[in-house]
View 1 (tube, one colour):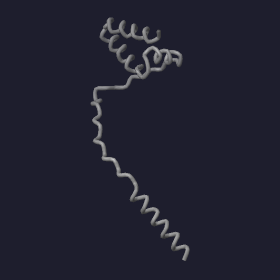
View 2 (spheres, helix red, strand yellow; view 1 turned 180 degrees about the horizontal axis):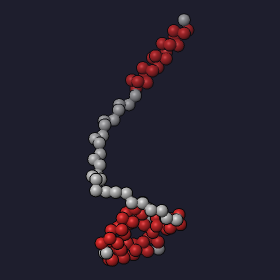
View 3 (cartoon, one colour; view 1 turned 90 degrees about the horizontal axis):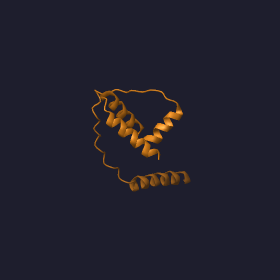
Length: 94
């Protein structure tokens, strides 16, 4: 008879948990992804010391953005943009 009580108690406890469970959050709408058909990945290897220096000069989380800006300035021959990036890096290091 004690077995029946244990089973009943377990069932009652599980119902209590289900009844007291918080309501589920409403589903968020899916985020729209950027159109990437015209984009490609460009990667290169560099020594760890240069990589650390790049991240320090660019600032937290900005190394990729700086490299894209430098590459764009190089391709277009925009010396002013190149010099402004170098100037910001000098200020960041100071």
